[in-house]
Image (tube, rainbow, N blue to C red; front, side, top):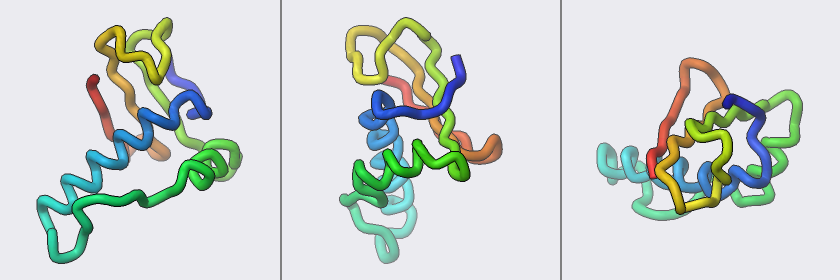
Amino acid sequence: MIRRATYDDLEAVNSLLRQVLKVHHDGRPDLFRAEGKKYTDSELLAIFSNPDTPQWSYCSNPMASPTSRASRTTWTSWNKPSAITACVR
């Protein structure tokens, strides 16, 4: 199911952003910190609710909650079809 990202996706999106930061840090530790956040939760929620910056989420199990750890679910979040990032729990 593909839908607009919401508050319920916040944990999954933060997880994706941490993974992206790690990839960048591993490749260029001189430019990227090992830890940190690009956006605060408040900033992410503002991005989610802004019609000019839509963020899309995909869940391979439409019955699963984004914060549920009970099942293996693929979560994907992107703002452009060419910028897809995937996370498998």
